[in-house]
Amino acid sequence: MSETVNVRRGSFVQSVDRALDILESFGVDNKELGVTEISRILGLHKSTVYGLLNTMENRGYIVQNPSSGKYRLGLKLFELGCRVEKSMDLKKITDYYLEMLRQETGETVHLAIMDSQEVVYIDKKEGLESMRMVSQVGKRLPLHCSAIGKVLFAYLDQDRIEKIINEKGLLKMTAKTITDPSLLKEELDEIKVKGYAIDNEEIAEGLVCVAAPIRNYSNEVIAAISVAGPKARIDSGKLEAVKESVLQISQAISDKLGYSG
Amino acid sequence: MSETVNVRRGSFVQSVDRALDILESFGVDNKELGVTEISRILGLHKSTVYGLLNTMENRGYIVQNPSSGKYRLGLKLFELGCRVEKSMDLKKITDYYLEMLRQETGETVHLAIMDSQEVVYIDKKEGLESMRMVSQVGKRLPLHCSAIGKVLFAYLDQDRIEKIINEKGLLKMTAKTITDPSLLKEELDEIKVKGYAIDNEEIAEGLVCVAAPIRNYSNEVIAAISVAGPKARIDSGKLEAVKESVLQISQAISDKLGYSG
DNA sequence: AACGGTGTTTGGCAATGCAAAACAATAATA
DNA sequence: TATTATTGTTTTGCATTGCCAAACACCGTT
Image (tube, rainbow over all chains, first blue to last red; front, side, top):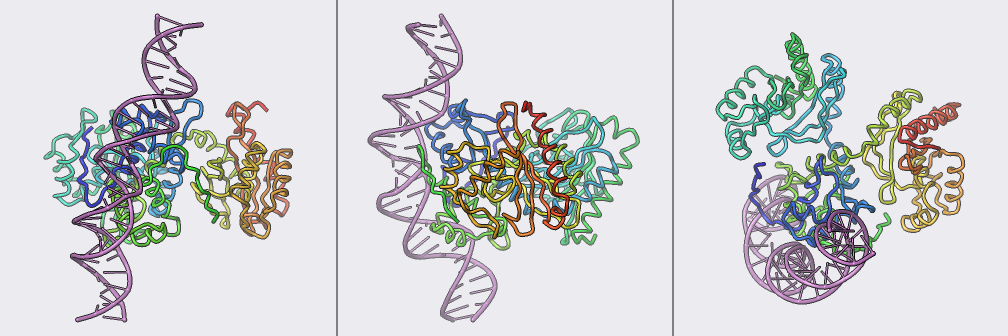
């Protein structure tokens, strides 16, 4: 894991920063953590963690399991998360089109945006087939290893692309992940020309995705949509049709947002 | 607004507590706030707020609008919110049944649980009619003024009921809100006997709801579901059918959770 | 050009957060 | 069952750190 060292700009409050560290140490795999456990993970003293944890528990951001004494994330975070979501009217606008895209392709469809140099999945609708891609809303991924990520990556300024590659690196996820900076930059250029991106098992083996950008009234790329499915099913002649659907729907959403391309 | 003064137990970190105050000051109505604005709301010094805000911005919990200079909640909160949600497998289990309940009744259906003496809406599915109740997932409400809240309220211990009434009070939302403690307690008793609750314009005028409890394997009430719609439509003979549907579905979900009533 | 309003930076005092150690209560060991 | 290890929790005191105040820089309005 390449820890990006934040350059602290302006005044900085240590205890708050640590509190956020604590919140983030609760992953999807480790839902419940103890005081000592967290203190080990973060390299902080037990009593320090306890104080922070206690403060957040009093506010409902953390809850303690009475029987085990361990802690987990509280519903207050769910509440705030929903407030953020609510302010994203993008989700409302795209909902209808995403459903259409799912119906057309039968596969899992996604809506994602970029946030602090990463892809964040905002919405998804699962495919109709029994074997389908299962992903999760709210998840973050690096930009370089998915169709949706590469689309968002491609439309950035050249120096930002450079900067992100340098800072984040290009983590190898599968044998086919593009880990060479110059190859990636070629790929991104090509994506801009074609107007869509394909992920051919670059993030997970057997998974193929097609993604296209969403533009707004000022012609900026503000989000992207994708269709994801098993290689076997997509590759067998379906790819072209999926590509057309993705392009058509992304265009429709962009139109709705006032894009005039 | 009756501010519940938290009795600070154990060690307490002031700056973290204040940081959470800041997060919560971003409501659904005021999505964007400035430093000065927040400092006024919370009664803190401008530079104090700035430092806290800055710390959270560096971590993606707050984002600044570059043009206006104002702040709003960041996507990191959405991400954490999703992690909490993910740990709630209750939502997954009920999804199918909620959809069924919506189809049967044609009205907006809800799933909610209790958290720190309040109702939290975990999931909803909007009604099929053009005029329908619009609510929001993640929202918190007091326990006494909705069908779903009263159900969750009813199955608590007598002393907890007493405690919550004393601490939170019974805020009047409409002319029909039950604000008399002894009347409410009678109502709660009745709900336990009948096994369902009705909200007859107690939270909003023209809104009628029917709710029933969800029980788990140890026969505890862990959640509740409800159907909500306009009084005109529900009252006109439909109430009985809605009530039956709610009871039937809540029973089905409870069965799924291992309830043996 | 002066004003009122932002967000931001700086400096210095002391309040506050934090580490160390002791405590209590449970779980795992023999 | 006695013993050890490991948990969450409380207390204490030192100095780090957070916070207030005031000044700064910027913008839009008057």
